[in-house]
Image 1 (spheres, one colour):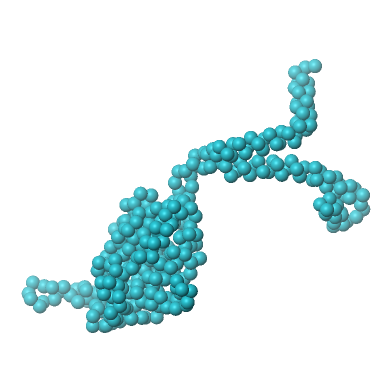
Image 2 (cartoon, helix red, strand yellow; image 1 turned 90 degrees about the vertical axis):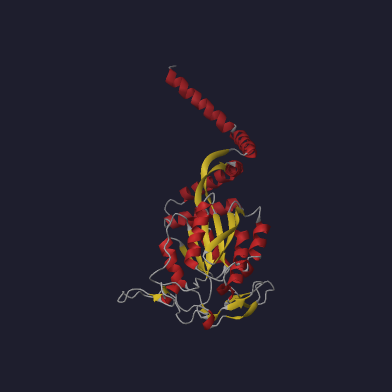
Length: 371
């Protein structure tokens, strides 16, 4: 017997042993996999990390009650834009996958201010919910609402944080004082360097803006005479002689007004959706009009807002699944073999039948075996 023949003989012997002890080998392999899964080994890899910085516009136009909500009592009624935003964010927080990180900030005047750096959402859910609940107009330190500057400030805050979270800027887009279309604030950052989402909240109809005192209580509504109706540059700028005003050179080409501008009606407010879309395009952010919680949740977990980071990938789940498959295969082997034999017998006993008839007979044999 030469070496090749001896090798074939050994292979045959091993194959025979494997066939005779297949059940024991499968159970041993399943037990080994379960033990390995209990140890929970891991391998280096990467995972998608959801990390968000939620910035709420807390200026007075966000107090306009043009949103519809069930409220905390479950009774439908009109609520403010800020209240609607808070309610939907609170509804979405528990739906975010564990491991997600969420921070909170506010916007007023011309800047965004960080209240809480991103923290893990499951371990800190109560704290996050409580903080969002208490975000209100009393936090505002100014009555101005320079939305574009606030958005740019929010992007800088997000870029400076560890992990560079995606910015979620929630606003109605109402600029106060109005912005000159010729001299709009420019974004000096790199568009798209920070992922983000502008969430527009508000109705389409113009509504009076509530006047709030420092305690957040409404004390009336803003009148047309109390707010600037045009941008400050259009009023001219002071010259060297008292009372003299300097204006732009005559004959300058006219500039189209900004989307949603309402000259002469700045005491009223609606969602400036066109303006927010313009800002989103210029900064390479996404835009979403706030409606219901499922839409907001889908936008927040969008892969475009997540970033990839190194991570250890646990092998417990795949190892457990493989062990379960081995056990299921072990106990299903005999019934499957019997069913296959019956199907083959049915196939051979009707050689002249059509293909459809043979398939039907094979299926009937399978059902009989299952019974």
